[in-house]
Length: 449
Ligand code: C2O
Image 1: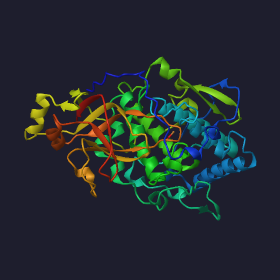
Image 2: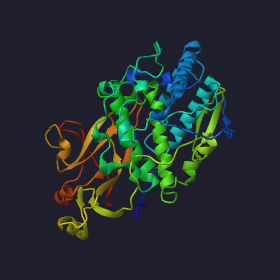
Image 3: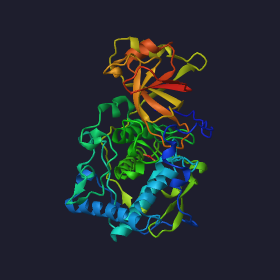
Image 4: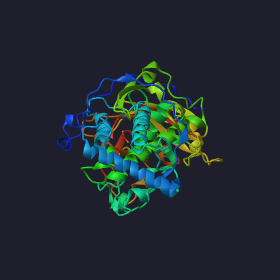
């Protein structure tokens, strides 16, 4: 079974310079929340209602969702200072993505912060609808059938009026209903196969596979691809697109599902620093509330749950081998037995992944192909190169620090045969280009299924 014990929680992340080029769009104060005196969160008395996939919504439920966002937008127009209104809700996210100097991305706070954010957002929508049975739906992109922008979010009008779920700042592919490229879900980089929370959801100073896998890639695909990345492609603007909330609802669901699949190995961190970390949000009554991570680890008391199951594959037992990696020479060494197993005509073809920790990620939003060593010449399909190890979408905001993450990358037999002993800096090359940023990492494991 997985052994993945060497973690370095508490290490300080290098403070990176803010992402250049877009800084003037947002002065720091533009996303500051209104003032308030917080009270402590009290568990609400709510009926536990399952959140549904967008594809499962009945016509009256679609109409209710549209009405909720119409009311949110109307409130922003009639009282821009009401902390519950549409733009104020979007600013909450902007504020926590580095605008305040406190970034909840790129670490283990990513999942619980967004769960709390969606919870208060949902309470506000219930209040505006005067309907406590409303729950946010999720965009079930884990299922191949739903890997395009849901139709109800695409049309500029709905029933003769402006569609409150529409946003104009999207990529052509998202806007016209095309499917996401398969590269967003590399078979060997499935976050649901992460062996423990540090890999799945991150640690004190590094993000996890869900955040730096489909989360970022789908943000970039929806809002990208061109710089300046509008709405979904930019953390400071992302929550100005209504699709943001249902994208994150699916991430929240995948977190719950990953916990469910293995309550022991997939337990959430028990560290006091994690459990007692607190955040503030305005609730449905405009009251500022202080909520701790431990208040959101179980969705049921927050009034929602998810039907068990998700289309990303089940976790399988994996064998973990720590690789010898020399940070001075950047050489990876495969143990003799692994080398022999790879060279031998294999009885069972094993699925091998390269797990690296504490990788400092590029500071600029984009879709990157990851190579060990030099990227091949720009070609239509660089992913066939022997040193190709993966694809990653990175989304950052304006006032950003550099993130670190553990990454689960692909390790084909061909790669392992040629890479052993080869220079092994990871290169992040913006997709389709032959040059990239070379970045160091600390530890490598080989996992085998
Ligand atoms: Cu707070 Cu998807 O980002």
